[in-house]
Image 1 (spheres, rainbow over the protein chains, first blue to last red):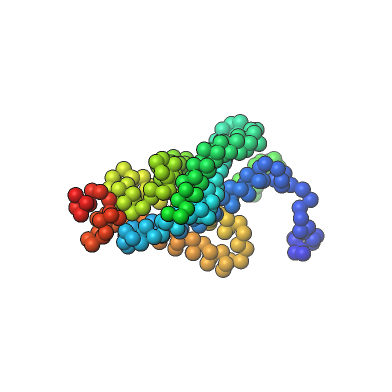
Image 2: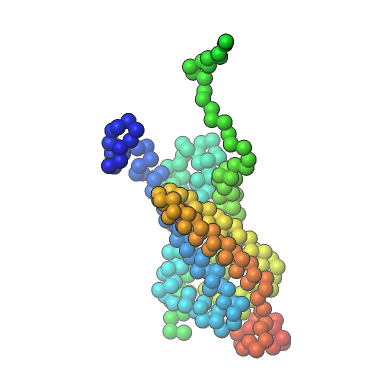
Length: 137
Length: 150
């Protein structure tokens, strides 16, 4: 354990902080995880889209891999990540700029989850039907 | 000799560094670009994955048809630039939080910068420089407006 300037040992775990646990922390954790996931997808997505500059057949070959059911599940997870990141991003902006933002941050977290469920109920069935009906083609 | 002794309760203020406050502008950028990206990306997902047959109809002709219009070129260009700078800045924040060794941090930040710049350049070139009707391209793969399909 590192020793600090006061000569006492720094405990590895803080005894308890205002920020640990609950909605505030979990929304922060999810915002980071979804952000990183979207970033890495973006790196790949620009590369696969760039195949249009190589040859029509090359682009079609790579985009066809996006149409198999396994990738379709991945795309559904990706859209879930994007929608959460988007709605929670609005929540963060409201916490920062709206005078009552901090007071309602917990309520807004559940609003984010609610809107996310509604959006995914709209997206997931439609996309999965498209992807699974493509099977065997 | 006279010395002014400040009141004990006088607030202590650290003099602000001169120059542009980049962290502040980064903070503002994340929020401003975030709002625009919600519109751009939701529009992108609706048009490409929800309307019509969704992902099933995406192929070379679909993309070439979209980028034949300056509207979608600008849409995708904005999405590319805003998203990569937003994502790169987010990754920078995360690296600064977790990378404790200076060398590790430098390497990771450098990798983020290089990949963001490379992807933005590549994407920008592709959106504007690709040929929707490449010579010798199979007619059935090309969009309907290409000369071979007229």
